[in-house]
Image (cartoon, rainbow, N blue to C red; front, side, top):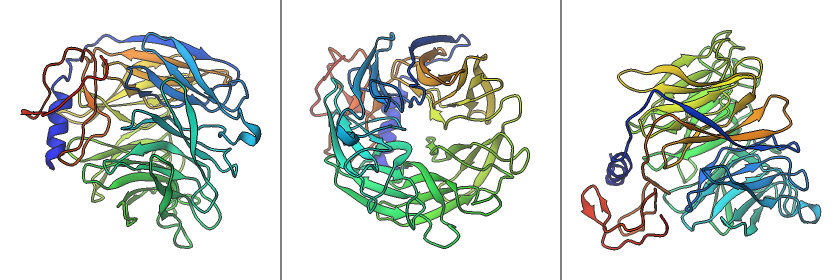
Length: 426
């Protein structure tokens, strides 16, 4: 394990909280006007939460919004406010908090060529398009949105286009984009088709999923899990065959021991149908299915998030418009349990996001499909601190999110004192 990972775990996990059997679910805000395509949430440096809606707003082409932990909702930007939607239209993914303090995201459409954009927005709502996709560098970026890697670049995925099955791209914060890998390099898309988002692993490589391609047990392939170096060398770690899952529509998440966990939308129970699975694979491709969703639990609507208790959390769409938030317990052995149940209120939801106050925040669709809502779920986990980017070379600045930071007199990493630090906000 590298030194920076040891530092990360020492700092982040020192405040890992004691769990509680009580759960408090709160609906913080609701959306109407067709704003049902709500993204997952991210925490800003001000402690508030930020996300996007793919529809609704003044123009019907979506918004960027801010919500406080107590539920005060503010719209920061209405998309397609410019002629021909040159400011972007229909964001389908969430935002990433970058080390420059700004939030970055993508739109599926709009921009100079109507093929999507990368945009930057401040927490006060100052908005700018930093890149318009033109087809040669990708088109219709979606998946799970952008990440900022430890090399300082943004990485993301784009949809399939002419002669390619989607791509992974790299961008500077200023919007200079480079394609580092194009899928479907062979006639049968053995390397995957339609990438669904990426993460950076603790080894510095990128890991992600494709919803199609790979093994052709399904029509068009059942999807893959892949590893990709930042230089563009791809390794397929696993090809799904429907017997152990199919159609992974979300990226994987890495646990401290290096394992990659993820979900598939379908597969297993009916070998081609089914309600999806939870899987784990090593970074070398040792694969195992760990949970098979059945008719009662009825399938995941999102990927997984790693909480400060060491367990993984996700959501399902459930039955008759309902759904569940579930927990995948890691120790002493992997086990599944439902944490909270929605009854005929919601059409599933995005991956729960754990803010540094210990609560989960997320979005879901209301049953009629014409709006959405934002919730908080308190499961008894306490506050913690986290890094904006989980690692860097010696001498670089580490940025930490938390609470109660005003009045801090020292900061240490694994017992080593920081030579300089400043408190930006509480």
